[in-house]
Length: 98
Image 1 (cartoon, one colour):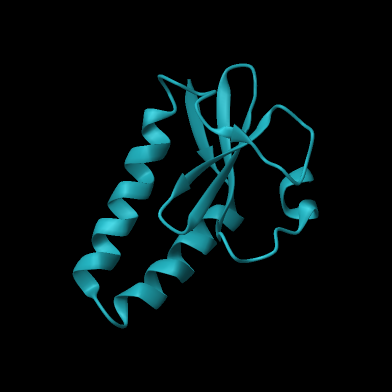
Image 2: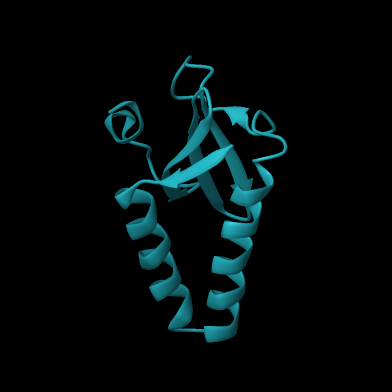
């Protein structure tokens, strides 16, 4: 299974890491490494994430990592990471349904 990262998801990871690095550079590096590792694990278990509650679309799923939601779409032979959000942030549905 191929994994594609949307520009929005890459931007979100960068923004979150930039915030974390202000207080703890090592934690920021660990966070980024773990996010990418968790997404890579989806190659073996693509349906392991739960369906995003804001939508009824079973192809839109999320992994929870700490306080963050890694939101992705399952397609026939690929998985697209759509965005990464803090769990307390509202999720604009248009970000994931485009």
